[in-house]
Length: 183
Ligand code: G3D
Ligand code: MG
Image (cartoon, rainbow, N blue to C red; front, side, top):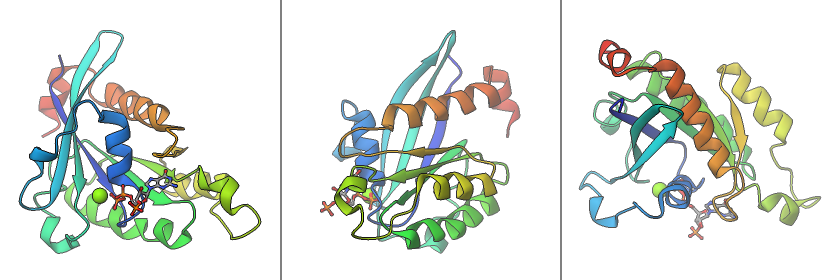
C-alpha cells in the first residue's frame, strides 16, 4: 500500500465535476462528508499490478473563489483533473486560470484534462459549435497533459480517465518512499 494520494477536480462551475466524481465513486460517495468550506471528497482504492493506493478525491463547491482556496484546497495535491464542458469553449479557456493557480501552490502537480458532456455531441451536432476532440487534444498538449473526452451522464470515458490518473500516479510514486520524498 503506497498511501493516500490527494487528487483534485478543478474547473468552472457547471462543467460536471461533481457528476464525474459520483459516477466514478458512487459506492463510496458520502454527502455527509461535505465540509463546511464547501468541498466534497470521496475515497477510492485503486490498484495496478502490485501497486495499491487510496485516492482521496476533492471536489470543490461552486461558491468558493480562488483566493479562499489556494492554501487548503491545492496544497498537497498529487494530481489534478481539469474539467471543461465541450459545449462551452469559455469553460476550456477558463482552465488556464485554474491551472495557473494550482501550479502556484503545487508547482509540479500533473494534470489530466477532461472534456465532459461528450453525450451532447449528437444533440448539438450542426446546431451549435462544440469544442472538437482535436481542439481538446491541442489544448491539453500546451500543458503536456493527456486529454480524455468523457460523459458523466452515460459513463463514457470515465473509467479511462481514472485509468490514466492511476498510470500517472504509479509512475510518479512507484513506492511509498517516493511518496514521502515528494514533500
Ligand atoms: P460541477 O460540479 O462542475 O459544478 P455538476 O457540475 O456535476 O454539478 O453538473 C452541472 C450540470 O451538468 C448538472 O445539471 C449535471 O447533471 C450536468 N452534467 C454533468 N455532467 C454531464 C454530462 O456528462 N452530460 C450532460 N448532458 N450533463 C451533464 P443540472 O441540470 O442538475 O444543473
Ligand atoms: Mg460541483
